[in-house]
Length: 579
Image (cartoon, rainbow, N blue to C red; front, top):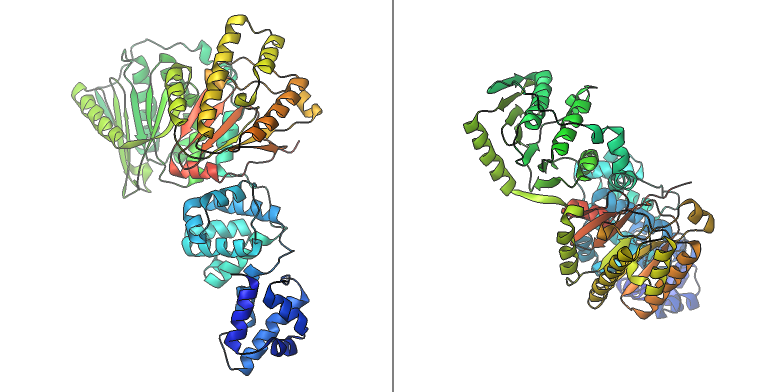
C-alpha cells in the first residue's frame, strides 16, 4: 500500500472531502490533492505530516469514530511516508546486531515480512538498503516482539537496547523501544558477537608457537607402569578431579591406540577454579595427542551460545592437530541428572550427579575388561545418536576435503565469502606465474600450484552457472600493505609457506577482480577497508554450512553445519580493528 491509498482510505472512512481535511489540518487544498494523487508524500518529521494526522483525528472526533487516535494514525502512516531521520547505514548495523544477538532465522523473518530471503540477506550484508526504512523497521520489530518474547529473549534485548527488561513486558513498550533503538543514530556500538572470539582464536593461533610454548615437541610419552586399582570410586570435587587425571594417565600409559570417546554435561567451572587442575588436564590431553590417539568428543551444547563458543575456543589447540572429531546431541539433554563418560582402549571413567549438586556426585574409574567392554558399547551407542558439530579437515584428509569441495560445487545455493586475501579464481595465469617466480618457488611446486588454481577456477565456474557468489575482498593502503603484506591463499592445498604479493601484483589482481565481476553476472565483489582477520577465510553456503579456512600453520578447515552456529555466522557482525 502507498501513502495515497491510505489517505484515500481515511477520507472514505471519515466520509469527508479534501476541502474538509484542509480546513481541519491547516494544509492547503492543493497539498491534500497532491498527497491524494501520489505526486507528493510528506516527510515523517515535517509539520505537514503532524498537521495532517491532527486534521484526520479532529474529523474523527466530529464523526464520533473513536478508533482513530494520534498514535494509531501515525503508526499507520509512518511506514508509508518519507523518513529523513533514519540513517540507513546505522539501521543496517543495528539490524545485524539484533539478528546476531537473538540468532534470528532469516527464513522465518522473510516469511513474516513477505520478503524474499535473499533481499533480507542483502540488507544484512550491506548490499541493499530498505526501500522504505520505517516500514522495514516496523516489520522487523513486529516479528521480534511476537517471536522473541520469552524472559530470556527480553533480557537479551534489554541489554542490547540498554533498558530494564521489565519495560519489555508490555508489548507496546517492547515495540516502541526496539523500534526507537533500530532507528536511533546514536545507538550503534560495535558489539563483539559470540562467534568473533572463536574466529579470533583461530586467526591468531600458530601451532608451532603453541608447541614451543608448552614444550609439546619435547614431550615424551611415559612408559613407566602405572599402578591403578582394577576399579575405584571417587566422591566430591577434589576426588573427581583426581579421577579425571588418572583416566588420562592410564590412557597414556596403556599400549592401546584405540580412539577415545568423551562426553560430559557436568559443570566444569568449579574444577576450573583450581589453579593446577586445568594445567594438568591440558598436559594429559597433550600427551594423548602426542601418542597419536584420535578423539571422538561429544560436546555439551545445552547451554547458552556464548558459553558453548567459549568452550569450543579452549579446544582450538587440540582441533589444530586434526585428531579430534567433534559431535553434539540434538535436543535438550539437561534433566535432573548430569552425566560423564570417557572411554579409551583399556580404561573407562563414568560419573553422575544431581544437576546443581556436582560436588555431591560420584565418579567411577575401571580397568576391568568386562566393564570397559560394556562402557565401550555404551559410548558407541551414544556416538550413534550424536551429530557432527564440526568436520575438521587437515593435511591428513586432503583428498576427502577436495572431494567435498568438488561435490559441493554442484549444489545450488548462494555463497558469501569474507576473505583475508584475494580469490584465486580471479587471478590470471600470467600474474600467478610472475608471483611464484618472484617468490623463488621451484618449478615442481609451481606446477602443483597452477593445477590447484585451475581446479579452483573450474569449481567456481560450476557454481556461477547456477548460483551467486559474493566476496568481501581486503582493500589496503600502501602503508597497510607494507605492514600486513598479503599472501596467496593456498590453505586448500595445505601449502603452509607464505607466497607474497608485491604492491604492484596486488593492484593488478584487484583490477582482474573488477574485470571478472563485469564478465560474470552472478559474481559480486565488495571492497572491505576494515577487515579484522589476517589468516582466515570464511565461506558461507547460505542455509547449508560455513567453512572457516586457516591460511597459516597449520592449514586447516572447519566445516560447520550446526544450525545455531551457522546462523550466527550468517548474521555475523565482523568486529572492526582499530589501529
